[in-house]
Amino acid sequence: MSAARDVVVIGGGVVGLCIAGELAGRGAHVTVVDAGAIAGAASSRNGGQLSPGIDGAWAPIARRALELWPALGERLGDIGYLREGGLYLVMSADATTPEEIVAYRRERGFVAETLTPAECARRLPGLAREIKGGVFSPKHGQVDPFLATRALAREAESKGVRLLAHAPVMAIDTTAGRVEGVRTDRERVVA
Image: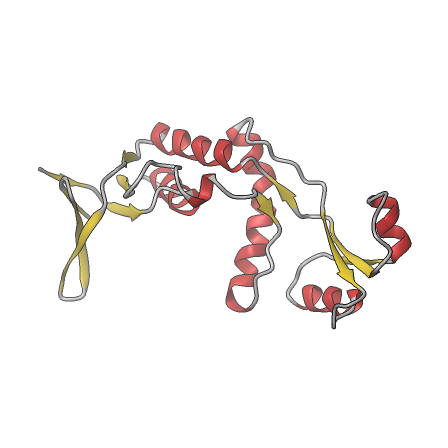
């Protein structure tokens, strides 16, 4: 069997489902192919922390992702979204200081502030005293990864995205350097 689509996305996790939903919203016919269950792997089984520590070319993408989650949470409904900030503790034995970490994060465009040991203790009663201080990032948050990934799958389907689960990609078909489709263990999807 062969199914013609505009776009084939390999991977039914957060990134693949976001890409598929966005493209479908712009009029593309999209199929998401995953070797396992859609929303069934790492994207739905992690800590759900929205606290990127990404450098280089990826830093702007990480900052943009932090900006997008509030609207995504509103649009998708109950995904367990909370933005209460993130606190990174700098232990006395650490080679770096809170000020160095804040400077590093700010250079990459992230919002962060230095906290003294006393300020950290006020936020975390019972905290051990062997800390230099902390770094608070107010835009960091969390989601329930299972709820978020399943909601993205439902949204993608509502936009016409075809979700093809338990279909490992066996080959990517190309002609003259151009991808023309993928072959799963069940069918070929033309793109």
